[in-house]
Image (spheres, rainbow, N blue to C red):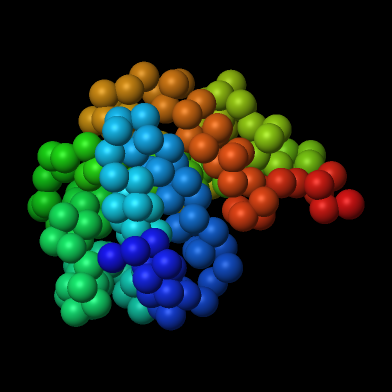
Length: 190
């Protein structure tokens, strides 16, 4: 499956602009890790784009991502990508074994958290986000309360990277695509 085919599936199933941007943010982080690890960038891009494609039609657990997997199989998505998507939800019982599976889990919650941190910066920009501000917001349980801090920490550990380095790496990946993610900030829009 190509990235373009995956994006068509995203646009077919996801109507929410913010959820589409989340898919793009996770894609940005995964592609950066694929490049770092010498992996297939398009495969990792497709995985990032599709990981939450069924959230609007299956918004409750354990339906997401379990009920979405057969839809992806019908669309010709490889077993490797479908397995990675299933593994990003711990309750599915699919263990994270491959670098792709570990990276998806590590980047999913963090990408959402980095977006939230961007939105509370004065310029609403990912360019204003740094590791220190992310770590401070992680301690504030009222901030972005739906984001699992435990998953962020566990994801970095499973990926075998230092948490601060992982945060910095994903900030940089998202900064490189800030305009596409709607995170350039208000100064850039003026």
